[in-house]
Image (cartoon, rainbow, N blue to C red):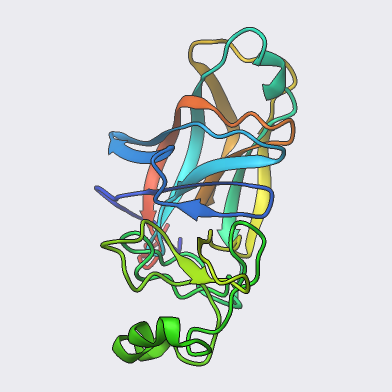
Length: 234
């Protein structure tokens, strides 16, 4: 079967966002790997989402999801109708929204609007950004968010039409999502376990909350890691 080689270790990436935004590298979203991929995170907002990207060379064979909510009694209802989903990257992608690097220094996506909603101006359209264009020719000819100064800027940014240097978040990549489980009642305040009827293989796993509560102490993905470029006979 294609993609049947197991992977001993990876460094999964945590992402989160609200609505159509997709942000990595945020302190509220930390991915760790200690036996099973897991994330610790907290974000709120209508249709928020939070999850793990296992990387371009790795998929997860998902057998079980364990999660520990982070809430008090008043917030418990806001988990109802939340979903756990598995995702595969659609092809072709209009832009690379997934390569991020350190503080976004490797981002080459097509986001051209700051998080404030103001449109970006071209990097070579103003003398204020001329030194960046000289050092990084890739900036010429477009107005997409970038971070040519990761030592002083914490994420991707652009100069907007109002003349400010403003932070951006990447666009949501084109991912096909499949619902694994929908919460129909309040979860327990301790560990909750979702066991799938059959394993599902995907690059992405996320929790989506239409009510707006994506706060978790931990989410663990239980199963196997699979190298996408390997195959074996069965």
